[in-house]
Image (tube, rainbow, N blue to C red; front, side, top):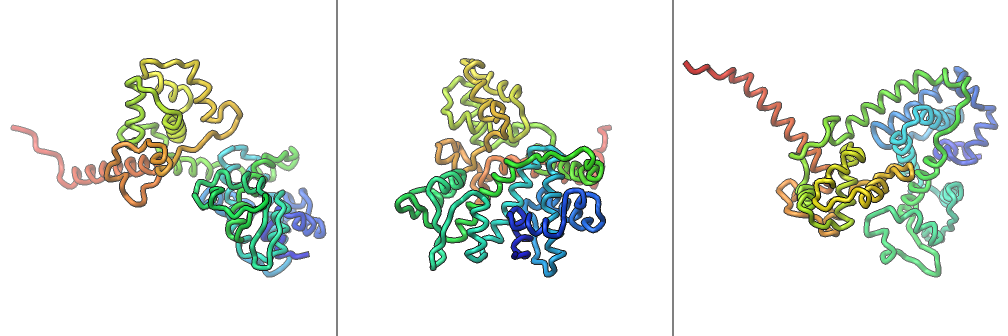
Length: 360
């Protein structure tokens, strides 16, 4: 048994066998002082997901340290399950998957094959390191990667087999692990064990609230029209003027407004400004995009290059033309931040100058 591999990839069957060999069970994990380091590390995994979007890893020398690392993984999953927030679940799954990707990219053949099989992907490796995987698995895992490098026309495919370098294969395994974790959570925790997790769950809940506020483009203030990027301003004006919006424009508006925290009732009001508005025709489309029809998270707003591809980049201003500006949400955040900065500077200036003298 490779205990180092078990610690690196705690979702493997090998990791479960390592824990079982050391008589590590759920009750011991939650109640024994021996596993207090595993509980601390499990909590740290979740907090790192919220703060850094990646779970850290340092190679551990002793089998005890490796066992603690293995046991921290189920404890982290239990904490996420107890909080019961979809945003946290997705964030945690992504962070564990990013960590796995960075490790798997440099692994030996045996480990790569073992990890891929655990994630439901059959693969083989050539002597030169090229990895083979079936086209259906490739299509399933690469379909949501927007870079042109992942398009089929740029892929090496022969007779239903895709040939990949290890770094690209590891990136696909990131998606596979993310999907696996999301599909497995939340876990059911026996009632008698919940009190042992109460304080950690409370701390994570507080960190989750802080993270949501930090990532909220409006910082809880709601949408402000002055911060909207030119593309969204133009699309909304088209809607108000009764012009027929293409599906890509409606999609951009709905996903953008949802990302700003607007619900269905607020978003439908935006489209209701159009002279030919018909809610019966708009409701299904809007709720589908928002994910309300299937209980999902809905879609993310398109980035700037997608807006350009769809012919929706209208009248870009100087901020749009900055090299680092790549997303309408980043535009909104930047505008909001600049406005608050300028307001703060104005306030300081007023304090320094003092009040204007009254007219005699």
